[in-house]
Amino acid sequence: DAGVIQSPRHEVTEMGQEVTLRCKPISGHDYLFWYRQTMMRGLELLIYFNNNVPIDDSGMPEDRFSAKMPNASFSTLKIQPSEPRDSAVYFCASSLPGTDTQYFGPGTRLTVL
Amino acid sequence: DAKTTQPNSMESNEEEPVHLPCNHSTISGTDYIHWYRQLPSQGPEYVIHGLTSNVNNRMASLAIAEDRKSSTLILHRATLRDAAVYYCILRHTPGYNAGNNRKLIWGLGTSLAVNP
Image (tube, rainbow over all chains, first blue to last red; front, side, top):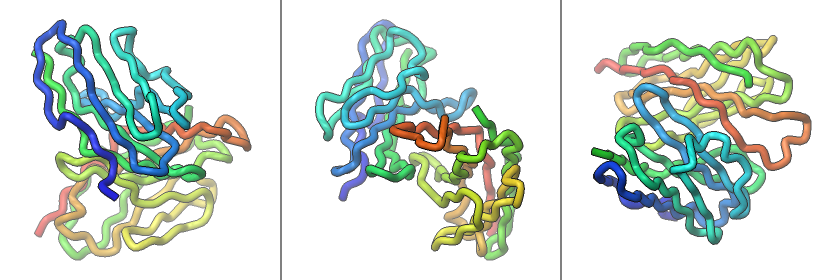
């Protein structure tokens, strides 16, 4: 298996633009997690899904952030409009049914100018 | 939510054992202790986890205190590739039946440097 796939790996955009981050979980995994990592705040859980349904979105910072999982093999995290403080590395992770182990993707490094 | 406390950084020499401590004095009875590590420019990767008993796998050993208020991740022979940030994490379970709760509570971790 290729592991969790994230795209793009790097994104540079200007303040006010819409940003869409994409994630393909490992096949057969039923949980999908979106995290954000910064030097100041470390790794923060934004939202996670179980069987394509959002379970906990309490970490989503504000209404500018939205996440969807239209099917078992694809999820998006959208920021609209983006702001410089959104600059971070965004990770997607997935896990197998009945286990806690999370498998992380390589991350998307987002820079908002 | 129960929190973990880890030293900000530690240093070790190659081929020597490393003991990475973690305090979790407010841990509840159903909280699992997980360890992940993050190599430079990569996503975190799972290392080991346990509930009450000590655990061993090919990567490391996990020693859990009898009162479960602390644990230690043991790397038996550090290599240069083990230089990473190590996270001690509690799996938050609101009750005996965690249902679909899969939330992990992350701290800032311990940055381990390995000297050649």
